Image (cartoon, rainbow, N blue to C red):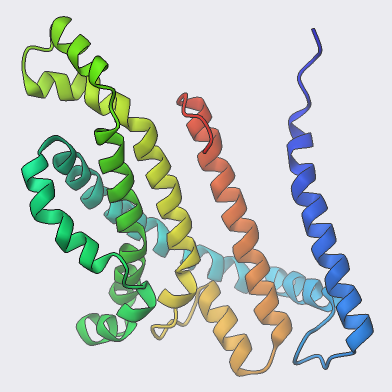
Length: 255
């Protein structure tokens, strides 16, 4: 029986992808000779990234963005998971609420920026609100899907084996069976919230990765813009990897 592959081998596809991107980037710079304000070299961008890290600004901005997404994600989970569970076990409630949610779901978080400023001002609440919109619907829909996807055979078996009331059946059968899909929703929602961080931090932010990027755009520092984008990509990958590992620990397959 062959030994399992070392875990570090799992990182090689990402290293290879990053190498291809950097090589293509360097080739574009060498062949087109753009100005520094338009497209800096990979080396210049990495030097800017290193400088931001040494000065501490990068850690302040990354911490601010992560904190905002985490708060909004937790609020989204607190509201969306119970709503999804209730809709899943009560079809009448779902028929009442589903049209309302489907009406608002297609609206991009970007579209809520003016209203967030009018309602909450330019403080943290407006940013959290925009990120809440981005995280709420993936959690809600996956929770509802998880409950609706519970095998009816499991429900019948639960009743036969002693779940003689709805509360006990929900706690012992429906919720555990729906949990993998709920975890997928939480993972997807954190990703959508992280992707929406730029939009959220357009609301008069003075720190955060979105602020770092928009400030770089205003002062024509494309190296700073690209440095912020790199940090968002790397942190997003690390966060998603953490969710995947948690899912495996809980017996949930990757999707």
